[in-house]
Length: 269
Image (cartoon, rainbow, N blue to C red):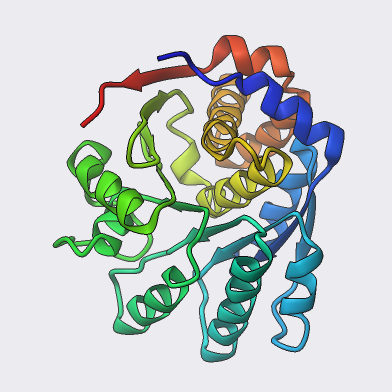
């Protein structure tokens, strides 16, 4: 099994500057926009129900993050997801802390009906979405990616989508092909909203590479992994790490992505 041409994915993104419609949480808006800009995409943060459907139809991709959800936002998310499904616009679901409350479960159940292109989540969230017992606490992952691999595969097959499960080790599957990605840096969990930003970055890569959603997803995660590793080499703590990460994403080249990605194709399950 050959690895996808990840560098080509980044080159295409930068050549097209895809517009990514982000319905994300209050905490993540600024950092997510900066991550997309640094990598080469164009962010937009809209959540009013009066305009989300119209804007989703003209965006390259949609990214939905339920972090600071409320009833009006849930309505907007469903309108946007329904539009994306109807127009063939790729969209990414980030089910933040889905196992924590019944409301989050209800919202995610409704959103799954509109067939996300990619689900980007941690292990606990994947297990909750797949209907497995999980002791998730807030947005923190209390299950390892190894424990949740089968849940990710089942979820991908059930939803007919890509599941990108991130943590110390990332696991990406479309239900048939499975990949493991390593790298990053221990400071990454010390900076809030980086996971939220990854979800939007996946949307940007899929928008630019719609014919190749699986390698596009891998490329997004690899970008983050390599940039995180480089940022950690020069950062003295979480604050300087966040700045260094933006610089590292901006400086990343397609050749870096192809040559430095710690990507492993796994045997079929």
